[in-house]
Image (tube, rainbow, N blue to C red; front, side):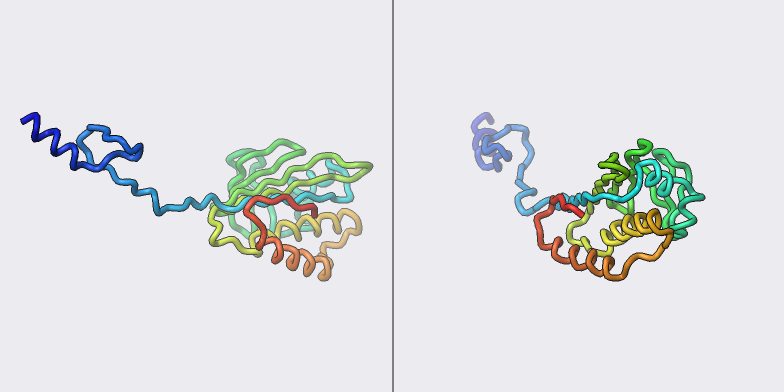
Length: 188
């Protein structure tokens, strides 16, 4: 009986370490053909010609938002609260006033980070992690870059219109970026 068990064990596949584990189960390396999709991570850095307090207030205070961006509304500015975009709730995951606003947009993670810049400027990082790199499209990134451009325009001129030339430049720049590796930082 001992001989049968040994000869049977010799015929069993070995575990992923290349040695027989003697657990009695058949081991196969089922993960060999899988290549993980870790998504795409994009970071855009830029400046807005306005103070940190003005930028934050115009992104998080509903009265200010309604003056320049009627598609956005804050419903409970805290983790677990919601940012309403075109009537659709987006889960807020992190808030540190006046420096960070992070949220889930579908399966994607978006964060807006702000720091005081030189003079009356505000430096920002727009971080966008796309969960599915196969579904990565410019249409996910461009609205946030255009939104920040519109905010700067509103704070400087009172106009809510985005310069169509600047908007076209943003979209063209993004098209070229999609040919880059999956984690990049870009000055905007």
